[in-house]
Length: 337
Image: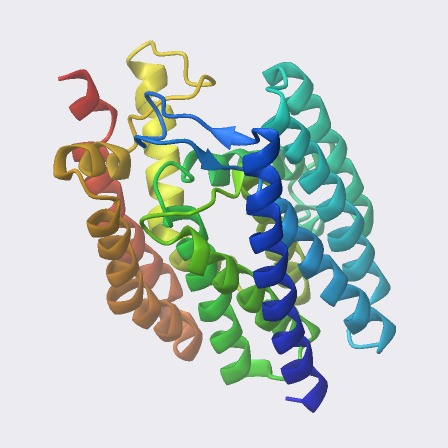
């Protein structure tokens, strides 16, 4: 790994720490605060919208990789422009709630931007899938990723610790298989950005990332999934494994809310992790438990899927099955009981 990556890593940490310290003061002064409500499970107002800081710093670091010819034009423009637009729109939503229909239109616009740079996505390379199916499905996938990351941002540290884990796990996979990949550099810098913010968001959180952060994470991860699957650097099975808990929780929760005739598109607190945080009275215990699960169960399965590609599907089942059971048992059904 070239020396400039270490320098960029350090610069990212310094910029995000100083930026968040300043932003917290501004947010408190101008009232950009998340007040206690039924969903966030907090007892005091906390500055929100901090995601705009690490989002912009990460894009800033991408510019240097691009300037140094370390990442392709397609990857840079897809992540940088789409990421900035996502973060800005999310920040507007943090300042003033935007209607769900308007957000959905914006998310499909972002999907179109990404599809342009990934040549329509990996589904287009499958002969038996028509173009009129492949394009909308890929667009829906990105929209789902953006919203899914918002769904898991319900208690201190949950969404950001997940981003740190995924970034670190994929960086490790690339180091073991293709350390020269342009994606390795991107994930290292994404790890620097998210882990620095986690220092401020770890329970008890002193700042929330808000939609400017959660939507940004969803867009970046969704984009990188498409790019790495198309390039062959990371298989879809490895991505399913590394996101095992989060994919299971968000999918099961939303499906169960639809079955229970709940308004699934409205904010709620019926995710399994939210129910357990409310019952235990501790964000730290729940977030810590998910981190431990990811490190001790999901990470070994992720590495196994790469070292033994023929076992990747089985590893994905082992990764997702416990999470599905957990989400089903402690999710919306528990909230309705």
